[in-house]
Length: 575
Ligand code: 4AD
Image 1 (cartoon, rainbow, N blue to C red):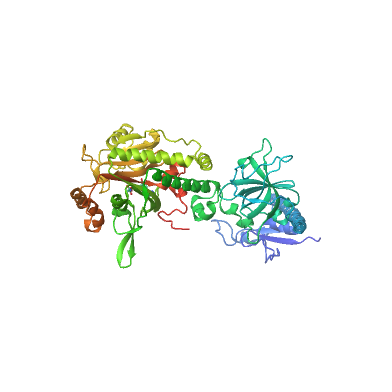
Image 2 (cartoon, rainbow, N blue to C red):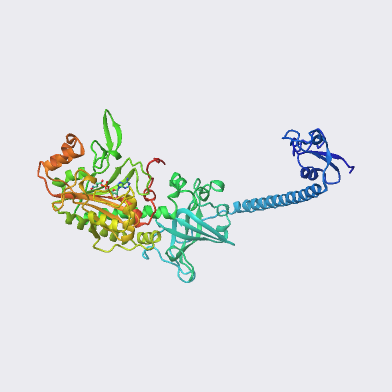
């Protein structure tokens, strides 16, 4: 090849294929010129035409084309060599990838030819959910002399793993998990080779014990003899695969945006299943205690827990609120129904973004008639402990709780009972300051952080009682021994803090009216509540337990947001 001359202008040259390297179309770097034309040419370069020209330097000299320095040439040759090697490697990889692609296509084309047929000679399959273990319904085979029950199961592919000619699938149906094994042609079909997580599938096969030393849910595995992925049952794969949308490393806000997918994960689904069991347990325990369930309204025109957290809305032509608590309505049921409870939604327009505040939460509330404050505390302790007992009596639920919270132990009875004044003294003694950074004093609201530190240090459930009237709701009965305080209780749990708030209620008409006046609330709207004090009043009391907070404690979740189906809080009302 004849020697040519190429020009490099470090200022206005360009390293693109439309440049020729001639003096009117120069390159920008020597490396690019050598890579494009080889090193056996003449290379001339110049520096800045447009940049700042240092004082005293000869501007015209900078316009002259000069031969490139030897060192620069060496560097450019090396650069060209590495670039060439890199390009060759990329080309090799591309060829390899194309070959793999072609091979895979061939395998898939072959796989498409495999059509599974159900063997009608096999015993009729019994349709079961994945958690059924009752030996009367399903027997486990051992792979040789003992035949297991042939079952038909439906579920979604939770995980899949391939080992040579065998495929292991973990199937999930919301009731449990099952290990499934595909062998022979079953592992070679087009569906098997392209199986994506979350695909819905119908599988038939024999249930067998897992071999010694191996592990699988319920110590069994399904040896499939037939399966079917019905039209439309396949889950998205590739970039859209569920594992690319939600994973352990995904940010919490994204997990909440994709809550519908997050719910399929093991942690979220276990929490939701425990939640179902806990709600069931509350219903069971309340029935044991002969309490009646009622369903108070959510749309109301009265406040219970202060105006600051009211969600207001236009109710036709009037102003109304979403209920903060069903307490006042429960109180009205006592004369006709006896002790009552409800599990309803409560709404709080909380502007704080804490890990234990929701805008919409499930509120377990109860109201008991003709009781003393001590009766109320005893009842509360009994309910909480019985609910735990009933919840833990389901072996699956118990296992889920222990998976989520391995150190969980049912709390010891009796719960620690501590008066507010003693808590203030305790906080002072332990140098835990109030919100102004000063030592706590009587009358201070014990803020979330201080409350949690105290609960975590004491590390057992606490009934914190006798709060000053000023920091509590208008309806609370005064303590006769210390009228500055009320017959009130917060139940505090390690890790979460307050999960229950309750009290005896003012049952004297005049005292209640005085409380309304003190709080500046117009009693007219509460005629239906104050009438209770006019028509056969009684010493009574009750409480509200935040279901999500109870679950956060039981399932050791960092935030109540992960303890409800689709959390609503300041800044989130979707999905
Ligand atoms: O202490 P609170 O505000 O008490 C009442 O509403 C009473 N009227 C209940 C009654 O006596 N029937 O709320 C009771 C419980 C709290 O202890 C807490 O567990 C929960 O409800 N709670 C919340 N949970 C989640 N997010 C919020 N914003 C909550 N506010 C209260």
